[in-house]
Image 1 (tube, one colour):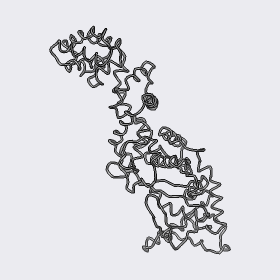
Image 2 (cartoon, rainbow, N blue to C red):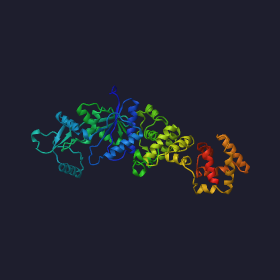
Image 3 (cartoon, rainbow, N blue to C red):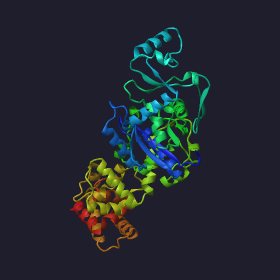
Image 4 (tube, rainbow, N blue to C red):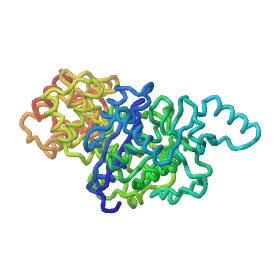
Length: 467
């Protein structure tokens, strides 16, 4: 298999949104394929018709698109390939690797009940496995895999190491139901083979399936893929991640305001590592990713780490890219889009906003001074800073701003001079200046605000506050 180009796949069931565990599985498969210059395929496992929905499929596709996980080739529908799955079951029947089982559900249930009562194994052994074809009734039947009864099946797993299953503990799994529909266990193997999948990277809750699926590969004389079963994600309390731990759907993280690059970085670090690197770009992740970096222990989801990484990505992002992501965030959360004028001032302000914002809501909060329009309504805390004395000092400052050179040094010099003329340090007028320019007490530096707003707007806001 070493000469074959790498093909990985992500195969979600469309029964809900794309959750964090699924997104990480998709990311690992995508990174591995991109690292090796191979293909990353997408298959929707929609055989459960009662639970599969088009809306869920759309949500999965949206989540992957937001994360930037592009797939190669067409999206494969497992349901649409049912006839091909059935064909393989019949081939196994013809080659003697499967058999027709006429046992009814009631008979199987009665066998298990009796076995439980006697303290014996409830693993069902079909009486039809080696029955004479002449004894077969004219009745509905399932096609069962004729699994080996002795020996061992070894899964050579790239994450878990060698995992051995005793064949006498494996059942003759059903491949084709009595209504002619294939089972999930068969469909997965046939699809992976037909799609040319070389590496199956998935959650370790599928590890037991690998043993039974290996038997199908062997029965058909197909190459067994490289297995890599990754530990599940736990919540901060060490229990399997669930709704009680907070947001689970990938789209929820988009609406919470995390950039996609930060989410990719964080998900990559959930269970995989490259030395001590915490913050890295997607290009670096592609360059570094390998299966040996995946740990054996479950990882814990930590919002503080995500916030920290998100802040680093926002700070490192090019302003134009940040503006595009911000627009996508506003659209995803049904908020009004920024006007051309607001986009312009926001772009100018980005240098003094992005260093301290951990997500887009925080970025917008810090940008409130730039996005607001006159007259600025100060909040309760800010209004208290605009007393008569403060207004008087601001009135002295305003005319001096008419002709000053509009640079940080010049602005700082003139503001400090006005404060000193009133026997005060600059800090004394910083609060009132914030209140006048932004209407709030927590803002970027007053000089950054003045530089972003420009001379005309700064003076107009000061006049409004002191008028």
